[in-house]
Length: 260
Image 1: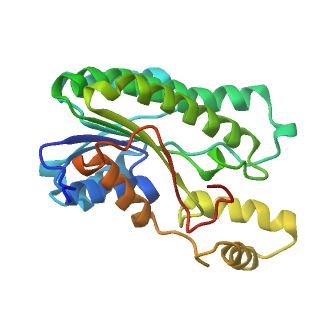
Image 2: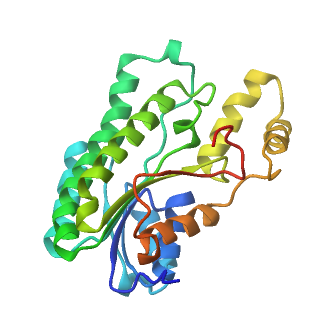
C-alpha cells in the first residue's frame, strides 16, 4: 500500500494543537511539505519545529479564521509559490448551547468561519490540483453529521452544512483526480473535548472526572480517541492509496455513532 506523500505539499488549518497538529506530524513523516495555518505565531513556530524536517522543510502562515479576507490573502499568497496537493480544513467548533438559545449572529459567524473560509481555500488550491492531476481536500468535521449531538445547536447545523458542501464539491472535481472527504472524529482527547466536559459537567451536577468516565463507558471502545488515530486516517485519505475514496463521511469514533 502506497501511503507516501513524498513530493506533495499540504496546507493544514488549525494545526498548532490537537488533531490538526497530529495530522501535520503524520503528513511530515510521510514525506509531505506542510504549510501550517493558525492564528498564534509562537504556537506555529513551535509546531513547525516539532515536525520531521523542522523549519527547513515546512512553513507556516499566521491566519485568523474570524477574518475571511485574511484567509483569502494567506491562501492566495501560498498558491502563488506552491502547488497545494492536499488541503485539510480544520476549524474550532462553535460554542456549545441549545439551538433555542442561539443568536442569529452565532449562526452567521459559524457559517463564515467554516463554509466561507473552506470555499475560499478550496477555490484557491483547485487550479493547481487540477493541473497536477492530484488533489485531496479533507475536512475535519464531527459525528454530528450522522446524528446531532445534544447541546451543540449551532455546531450541529454548521457541520451538516459542511458535509453538504463537501459532497457537492466531491462530485464536481473527481474527474481531475481530486477527492473530497470528511473525517468525523468522535470524542477525542483535545482542548475542545475538555471544554465540552467542563461545560456539561456543571449542568449535569457531576464532576468533570465523573462525566468523563460516564462518557467513556457509553463508547463501545470504552475510551476517548487519540489525535494520532484521527491523523492516521487523514494520512491514508491524503495518499494515493485512497484515490477511489471520494465524497464520504468517515466516523473515527470507537463505534460510538448510532448510525451505519
